[in-house]
Amino acid sequence: MISKTNQLEIRHLRYFLVLAETLHFRKAASKVLISQSGLSQQINLLESILDVKLFERTNRSVSLSPAGKIFLKEARHIINNFDKSVHRWQETLKGNEGHLRIGFVGSAMKHYLPPIIKQFTTRYSEVNLTCEELTNVDQLKALEEGQIDVGFMRSNLVSPEMNIKSVYKENFSLVLPADHYLTEQNFVNIGQVANESFILYPNESSPMYFQQILNLCSEYNFSPIITHRAIHGATIFKLVENGMGLSIVPNSLRDENNYHIRFIELKDTKSKTELFVFWKKNYTNPTLKNFLKFI
Figure 1 (cartoon, rainbow, N blue to C red):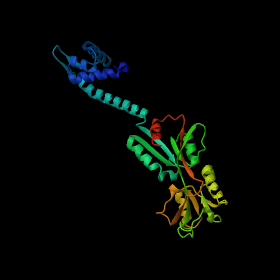
Figure 2: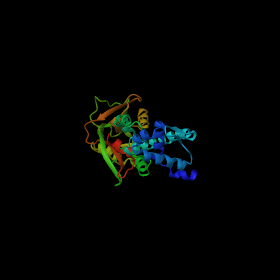
Figure 3: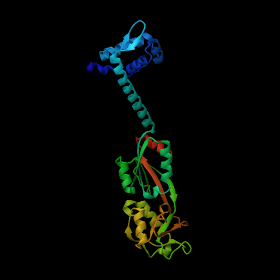
Figure 4: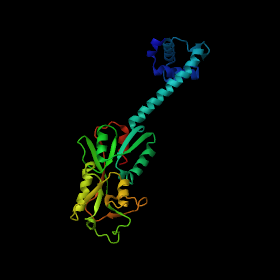
């Protein structure tokens, strides 16, 4: 009996279930769209494969045998799991289910990304989303190694195997201690702090972003005196709060509620900072296609 079960097909189970529900060959045959004799042959084949009688038949009636009653529960379980698996596979192919892994720099999660993620998860609630804060360099490495599916960074330097798109451009903001002499009222331009110390994002972590800050300072004929380097906004703000220097950050990263610091948005400068989304050209994760529609 065991050796013959590899001949068992899903259609045999479906035929069995319909007949078990109707206990009438003509009605069951009509539901499964085959002839009555064809259904009878398929049920006989199923019983032959299982080597057991599933139905008791007379000229007047059809009923489940004791073995058939037991098999009914198992057949329902098999068909239910099969249908669920096929549905899950179809939904995964469409990108409606699955797993999407997103890398991002901290400033992207301040204003730009949250509404997009909310819209996506509302529309595709069955997609399991994983977000990880990473530097630009770490995001590139993670994408190349398949650890993330898409990234958001402040650099456009990617390999030819990747797609990249600018999604958000914004001003920089100058970050100062709360008691600094410079305020919105007496601020003229960033050249006023040319001789002060700066806490900046490391050059090696994002050469393009670092160069944009240098270009900003160059507009006012100075090169920043860099005394400290930090990756995360919270660290930068804490250092500024404690008088370790000033900083320049994307305006979207500003946080005036949790630190004793002050921000001055640099509105009249040529240099801006951009946020880019990037992903592999030959990606295979269907959920990414749906996510990119929201970008």
